[in-house]
Amino acid sequence: MKPPYDINSDILQLVASISEKIGAINASHLYKPPTELRKKNRIKTIQSSLEIEGNTLTEEQITSLLDNKRILAPQKDILEVKNAIEVYQQLENFNVFEIKSLLKAHSILMNGLIETPGKLRATTVGIVKGNKVAHIAPPGGMVNGLIKDLLSYLKTDNDIALIKSCVFHYEFEFIHPFIDGNGRMGRLWQTLILKDYSPIFEFLPIESIIKERQIEYYGALSKSDKAGNSTCFIQFMLEVILLALEQTLASQNINLTPTNRIELFKSNAKSDPFTRQDYLRSYKEISPATASRDLKEAEDKGILIKTGDKRTTKYEYKS
View 1 (cartoon, one colour):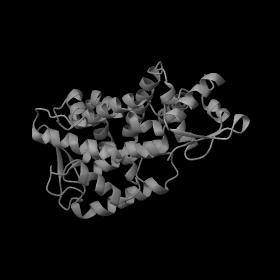
View 2 (cartoon, one colour):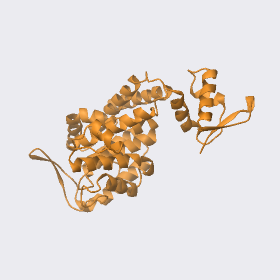
View 3 (cartoon, helix red, strand yellow):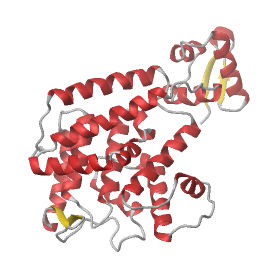
View 4 (tube, one colour):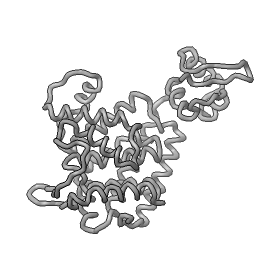
């Protein structure tokens, strides 16, 4: 059964604005930020997602852990961060439509933190906010079937991935399939769905905006619970995604170095031979002479292999 939600005019406008921003990001070559910015955004994502769950580590401490340095902090918080670093480093290994991948990601994320990482819950649980029970999740005996149905919706429904990623996120939190780790897993899986939709989402710090708007985040989940559909949550998450894209566009004064350009072009060329003209078509803002210097520098560094001469010259990324 398709999860209940409505596509209203506000949602349609948000989808149109997001699509426009993705187009602008692609035109600005920001779809895969330079290495240092990718690292910084990944750290912000991990720190924000875990802070929502009560983790105390700062971005500086997480940077130290990424660099294999020792820090002074609660061991549980350190383990949470190390697990999150590992799971984000393995994003390419997960299939968003497979329950096996979902369980594997949870087993990495919650390893050493709970007794049954990577296992769907079999008991009934409630979510408590303050002194009140905010949500009673479906009985444990229904969880496996509900998650399989949700993954089937994700794979087969005709709605665009932007919408389905938000629906999945809400429904995942509603089902609450694990004893612990549901919040960070729901946000992680939405990132994976969006990454398949557009490469920019792999390094977009959506989590940091959710952290800044944490009260609204939980409020949107609660409103959708009361309404019996995810429409409110879809709208909230699309607003978050749009804001994250706008922040990325605001950073477009980043000057791409020759190394950045060569690195970005690899996702277009893959393993196929290409010419200087092919390279120039991706970077209309640079001159033929600059393109030649980029390619020569990459060849000298052993990144590219050059074949032919003059008009027959072609380049290929070294495997």
